[in-house]
Image (cartoon, rainbow, N blue to C red):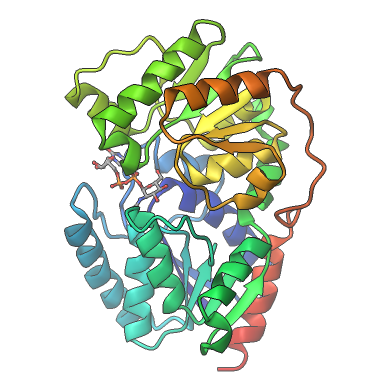
Length: 358
Ligand code: UD1
């Protein structure tokens, strides 16, 4: 089986690390890894390949720092050429980025079956580029690998039961990665941290591109920082916007970190505040409460189980959630919501069976 895998943005490197490792351990799988170039700074890309021992991409399209249309268009063109050249049996795409939709669209037009990892997630906010990317990718996928029951239910409501595709619940490859690398992070992390801080990340367009929202969030974080240190590994997008808006901040800002450092931050923090999708789950994997700085979350099961609160950019709501979670001791959450590390195996088993039909 020849699988072409498209990666381009930071969370996709983490997901590919789990699945590429499983592929490499099996007979008869050749993976052609393509990096679109969407994330290109060393601490947003290279560090993940090195630390997580992800195979070197065979191709790098070097497409980045463009508007949505130009970025997606150039990726589409580049990936189409690579499909013609490599003739893979299947195309594998992850998540909801511009790289995801470009890979799926290029493949489906050339009749290469598309397999979407992290299918079925919805925020129900069509203003988010990620929501548009994931809905369109799901619709043109042949196999939809869903991480959760909620994802399966979303697809069912949208009529996918009647479409010519397979919907499979497999668990979440991010849990596979967290379990595997948590064993190694202590020795490999370069950070030396006193426990008990608040870990925060912020990069979604809906927050960074709206000065009022960004200011409101930063003001709430600064007030929390007065009693409990807030550590913010800052995404380049947010860094640029803070500079553009002339906003100075007293928060403990650090450069984006690699995966081992992120795991150590997760292990030692008392709570997570984020607008990232992946970090909400990683907080859960490491037994930490999460305050979600968005108006919706795709990970509704975390909210249902009381370990995640969705507060948007409202300063009062952020502070209330912080106080609520501060009063509860963090504990190991004994819930199996994401497959407990079996997702990569489930996907690989299914893919081998799926491609044997062609
Ligand atoms: C993208 C994904 C988002 C994912 C996120 C993870 C889309 C629409 N969004 O958002 O789903 O959660 O990645 O980080 O695909 N930049 C750098 N250096 C880098 C990477 C980016 O300077 O290494 C700059 C870009 O040039 C751009 C800005 O940061 O100006 C935003 O990058 P972009 O790739 O557009 O989207 P993300 O916000 O990272």
